[in-house]
Amino acid sequence: MVPGVFRARRAHKGVQVSTEVLVDQAIAVLRASMALVELLVQEVSPVPRATTAVKAFPVRFLFWLRAFVVCMRCLMRVAGSTGANGAPGKNGVDGRPGFPGAAGREGARGLPGKDGETPKLDEFYGDLKGVVRKASDASYVGGARVDILADKQVIRSVVTPASGKFRFRIPGGEYVVRISDVAGMDGLDYTEPVLILNSRTTARTYAVAKPLGPGKLRMVLTWGEEVKDLDSHLITSTGCNVYYGHKQCPDGSASLDADVTDGFGPETINVHSLRPGVYKWELRCFLGCV
Image (tube, rainbow, N blue to C red; front, side, top):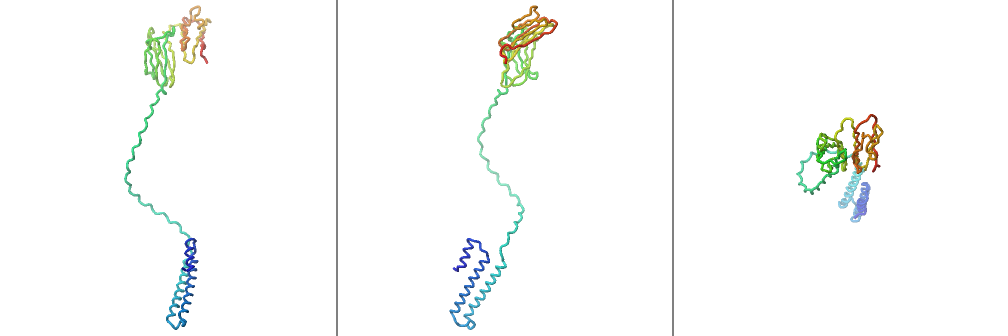
């Protein structure tokens, strides 16, 4: 193998070599080959070239070989070095959409869901715990009818036992308590508003009494569970002070008829005969006040 060709091949594999360098190396190899051919011709036959047809063949061969090399060199020079890359072409027009594929298989059935939690209705309900007592002497009233009204419609109803106690469980909101059918109090229709709070118990005492005639006055005090005992004081127009320590005026014009000390009341002061002047009613905390 010719060394020049071997170097050209090895360079082509590992390093980028220009085309002109390769052509020059090829020309050098051809020239060396031509020189060897001339030497061989001279050694084979010392006879002058022009006298024999045998020696004319190498001459013609060398002539055409040189012409071939010159043409190759011209072509390589005309070709020149590689030009810069051209600008990228424009994108072609989008093709038409293909036909829709076949429908896929139905997926596997999922696991069953968990049961929902039962809503806690207790969070939206409250309790009304009450007792019906007479305002005149604080005795318990049995057989009374107790109605719970919402928007003037009865939604709950009960008849009290001998203890006079009752209890309702109703949604939180504003209601009206109505008490009727009390024995010995014909025509009584006692009403009082109440607010029921969610998840809480509201305690109330309902003191009922007959209607008063003209020239008379009644003050009834009841309270909730926050305070243990409240006291009612009345100072009449004559200066008489009616309270738990002085339950009746000397002239009998006013008296304390009910004094409950175990909570919720009632405490009732009746004015049996009104006198001209100013009456002053005071409330004082006796036990369990903050």
